[in-house]
Amino acid sequence: MADAYLAAKPTHDPDLEAALHATTAGVPPGGPVLDLGCGAGVPATAWLAARFTVTGVDISARQIELARQRLPGARLLHADLAGPDLARLLPAASFDAIIALYALIHIPRSEHPTVLGRIHAWLRPGGAFLATWPMTAWEGSEDDWEGWGAPMWWSHHGADANLALLRSAGFTVEDATPRTQGGETWLWVRARRGEAALSGPTGDERDT
Image (cartoon, one colour):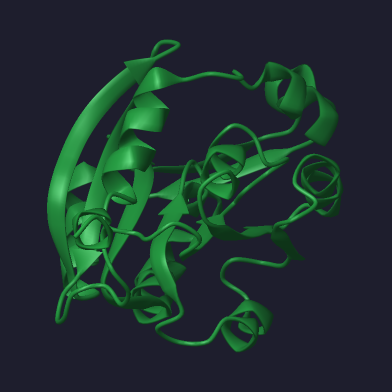
């Protein structure tokens, strides 16, 4: 399924790139960024890797294999986003930005508070988080998703509940915008861990 999924991915998405730019606006060049559910590394991970030091995580060994072919300089981990191994591998306060696009929906929604708490802890103070969720709650599966010969499972809350979970985890929600593409509407959310500013100089400070 990983190869079919890769073939279906767009190579250029202006809306995605605008969201990534907004999320990483305060990250210095080469700063540490985490992509949860990186898949085969395109297009989001590749965009990040061209600008920052990227760690990508995916539960699919084949997806990680494909990503390594495209992004040899990135740190790519085959791990469960909600599993204990990843919590041990990634130190607290080690990333300036984290993204999770179309990824958290494949984790049981009962575990979302714990996962969001981990994401908050992995961010440095002032770090940004970009995530996508469907607008409505649902839990279910398909035996042959998209006709690609493999099952897929989803578990998620609706938009208001997801925003509440983010705030409960300690995030400040900066933007929550519905975006419709391919007949589906997703909520694109940019949030931030509070406290102090990012470590390292921002773009404005580097120019002085």
